[in-house]
Length: 232
Image (cartoon, rainbow, N blue to C red; front, side, top):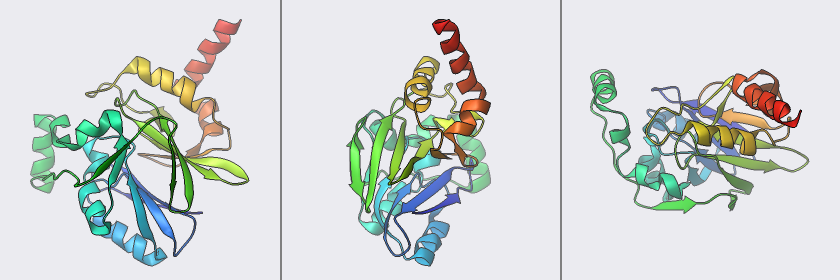
């Protein structure tokens, strides 16, 4: 399986590209701000043909380039139904102070909604680009945050965790649509049951594994300790 990433110029968002191998169809996940040219080069270098553009949630740092990327390849944007509304005007989530700061540094940000949007639901399986992908609805960072689990025959899944799980941390819950209680439920019911060998590609920061996070991530350790106290 071919897996490569491009880091966005703003907020360091990871745009992941997954394909069965070079010269194949691929999926593009979370095309953020300023990734277009490098994404084109990555696709050219590996002779990849995008078959789907998947969004882990609707925040602007994960969606900013979705419309041009989808338009270049005649594709729909794919997002969970509960975050669909965010594709109408994701700039509004930034707040006036942050928007002003970004405008001062990068120029005016312009948003155009994708021409076609496909919504997905929890546990939905996507057979695309020769890949078997399962949607895991994991709210907390936003209402419609999801993780995409890519099956790898003979080994543990590859998990595209968006802003649910990072190496050593988890997604913020203090932004519009965030919910601390929902995040804890998602970590307990969607993350902790996963196999230790699962490779995790987060929306920001370095790759990790579920096993590594289980013994080092303070949020997961807190949940494990609470579960142990309940059982004892």
